[in-house]
Length: 183
Image 1 (tube, rainbow, N blue to C red):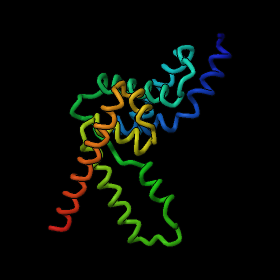
Image 2: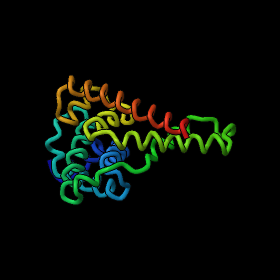
Image 3: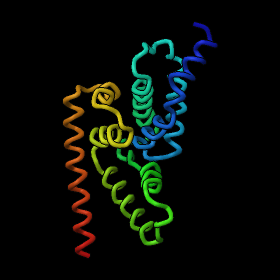
Image 4: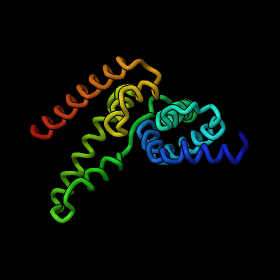
């Protein structure tokens, strides 16, 4: 292969998945700016290794590179205690797009924003393996097999992490609702 065919392969394999790559990086890093840096570095890694792509699932291949790049980047640039998640623009956009814009009142918009903030905080409080698995499945829509490929763990572990992560998420959200009602 030459540089032209590498560029064509990169365009075909990587570029269609950059939005998903950014979303995953943002979930892991918790910051838009950091996610941009991570995706840029991951894109460079993908380009350098495009010849190593064996024709499997390109989305899983790209997200694996993004995930590995994100954790490497975070280890180099941040203490582990600071890794968190900031607002989830994708969740808010999905909620806004799913509703009838004409029927939305300022009150329903405020409730939706509050619900989104509670969900965001609950997801951010999950341990990284649960948060990562939950995001890959419920936000990115990856299959169990794809998540196993991206994270490098067996499918049984993926299913266990997803179940435990969802259970913890529900407990956190129920606790938040109880606190709101009590106040």
